[in-house]
Image 1 (cartoon, rainbow, N blue to C red):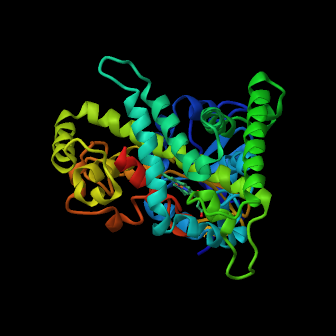
Image 2 (image 1 turned 135 degrees about the vertical axis):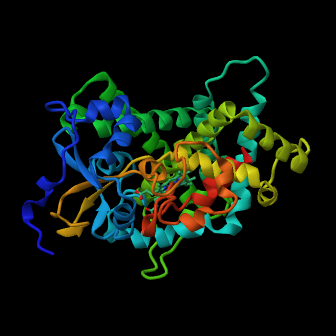
Image 3 (image 1 turned 60 degrees about the vertical axis):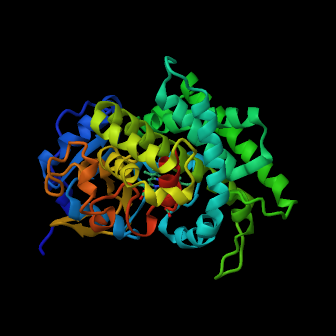
Amino acid sequence: MNVEKSDLDRIPLAPGGLPLIGHGVKLMRNPLGLLSSLPEHGPMCRIQLGTDTVVFVSDPDLTSQVFVADKVYDKGGPFYARAREIAGDGLGSCPHDKHRRQRRLCQPAFRSDRLPSYVESMTRSIETTVQGWHDGKVIDLGVDLSAMTFRVATLTMFSTSLSDNQIRQFGSDLSAIAHGLLRRTALPAIINRLPTPDNRRYAATTRRVRQLAASVIAERRGDQKDRGDLLSALLEACDEQDGAPFTDSELVDQVFTFFLGGAETTAGCLTWALYLLDRHPEVQRQLHEEVDSVLGGRTATREDLPSLPVTNRIITETLRLYPPTWVLTRQVTADTELGDILLPSGTKIAVSPYVIHRSEQIHEDPVAFRPDRWIDTTPHHHRKTFIPFGLGARRCIGEQFGLIEAALA
Ligand code: HEM
């Protein structure tokens, strides 16, 4: 194929960018509106985030190529640049050359024999949340569910190492950081460095949570007991290839990776699921019937989940329509061809599960909420095009954890 070095110019520029900020304000104000408009410009188009040019890939096949070739399309770009400010080189944000060791070290923490103790923390947190609700009470579902999933994340990570007050403070700090991340991704780096009250608060919150995590890790180093929590599994982990465990600072990065990767995502899935159920009373009725007949009023356990197909389909369909990780960025590490375009090393890439999931090439009536579409097919059959958990070597390590938590809730 005869491709020129200046190929980036052949990719159309999305309209509506502003001087200096580019499409950043649009992305912050109406992210899904902006993303949904991009496929009409072709399989790839360029957007501008501050001074960064980002190539947005909206074609399903090209998107899966980006995911799978994780050495060439490495973690990078504006989202991961900001994520590294909090989670350093943790599993989710580390570059390819550090990834495989970290994945080997983290994997045992998600083995199925460790799940029962995490499920116990999930059930406890779900009950605490729901017990605070009663008929007639007005709640902000997003806030309550986010507090619930942060509580689950904190209990599964640290079990009994934090007091109730510390858990609450930790959860609200982490939620503030997760929300700040999107804003900081959309804004030029120079604005993020200004000493504004927002930026100073963000920096102080990040310092506070990292210090707390570091102090728990230091305390637990001295105590070899396996408490069944994620931290015990991470402390015990030894790399089968070089025999080395995680260092303290790697562990702090890992802790934040799991909090940032696992809590808001699951809360987002649940919030959208309840929103969609509210707007689709017929599906809501099917869910109630299933839950009443299988559980008869008792709390669900992990063993019940295979007997709850309607519940599982609702979660799948929610993740299709509203994937919590709706955009992801990468950075090209060597000149490479994508489609018929030569992308030079350093090109920043964005892909969107949200856009792929709503493609008419893949689903009939793609914007409709129809959990029954998953009766005759499964997410596995759509491995490359149902991608709420990503694809390839960087696929979500907490997929089962998140799906179990959502279904139990
Ligand atoms: C519904 C819930 C969840 C969704 C939708 C979700 C989504 C994702 C996605 C899309 C990725 C790939 C990111 C990329 O390729 O750049 C990912 C990676 C990751 N997720 Fe999740 N996630 C969920 C739950 C969780 C949970 C519960 C945890 C931890 C307890 C977790 C931890 C991680 C980690 C550590 C990675 C990085 C994996 C790697 O690079 O090897 N996630 N997640």
